[in-house]
Length: 496
Ligand code: 5AD
Ligand code: SF4
Image (cartoon, rainbow, N blue to C red; front, side):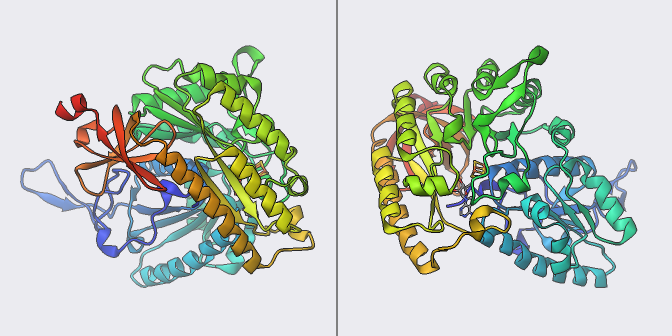
């Protein structure tokens, strides 16, 4: 399972154009917008409203960036469309973490080029923009492989999207913008947050200095950078005012957060969580993704002390073999990880743990995989993500000998995933009969069904009225599967 989540919207049947999007934004239905004038009964046809189509790949940080770009575009008069053929602007917000994700971008671009050509024949322009980590990593190579692309924009430059689009249109040549300019994007884009879902993302940190040998992030997102604390608290307040009761703090290495506080002080992630916990109406705080080396005592203590900090920790270990951990430059051993987990559990015994695993890293043996399975058994994860190692250009591991054949990777992945799925099932089974506080996030596919999250981030389906969306209600767990629970609203809420 990837963390693609809410941003994925591809492909959509054409007939969906004209409906409200999942985010509640009104979508463009036609080329021309009819409006009433001051004269009763009279209508006039306005010039067509510009519309954009945006597709998000990859992690929640891309989802956050996409939401900020959508807000900025809305303020420039663009409306969102889910129909590519109606889009004057197409943005692919891309992911470079594994080869598959990056290659998917090029196949999408081929299809979008065909639509651009068809629109051109009808005298309509389409600006094709590639944003995100593929843009940052591949720059001009994207335009070489797909000359229909007009704009390539790295993750640090989204605040310049409007200006760069205008330039691309005027100059009629592709613009490549991949500068690193730390906070500028946040200063400009985070201001607009006017509407929120009950559960919102907030990027607090970007980039990474860890240089795990398999990972492109230090190259695509650059050096680690933390946003100032006051700016984050202000954005969180806006989100709460706009309807959020849960905020997930995002960062590629979020627990390395060290933002500027008042009068020259530096604030850690624990300090930031404590500051956010003072916001009235912010019931739940989560954070991801963390590195084991940055899990300090204060953050562990925060899990014991701050009721708003949810009992869930995503702490990737990648492998249970010291030999592999060393080759991956993870900077800790398997025993150190287990000792850390013991400390976290001592502070918060019910905490749900999750992790990322990579199988088939160069030189990995059967013994290494056995050690990974052993670490999984010793830890007990509530959920996890596991991946086949994918060599990424420019990373040290891509140049190593002893690359593992794909068939072997597949077989190892199956074993690791099998055990992780069993553990997830076991964790969910343990919830049966418990009554938990559930944040109702949205109405389900069937309109009498609500979808929410338990404190342990389990997805839970309950029957109840749509008026409960955004509320935290008591739910008794009545059933479970590997990926979700079912439950019943406590009797007083159901009766109300
Ligand atoms: N190949 C496979 N998985 C990778 N990840 C990062 N880089 C690679 C790669 N080259 C995984 C790691 C990381 C998660 C976000 O993606 O497990 O924690
Ligand atoms: Fe990549 Fe995470 Fe390692 Fe940083 S800590 S290099 S983001 S895997």
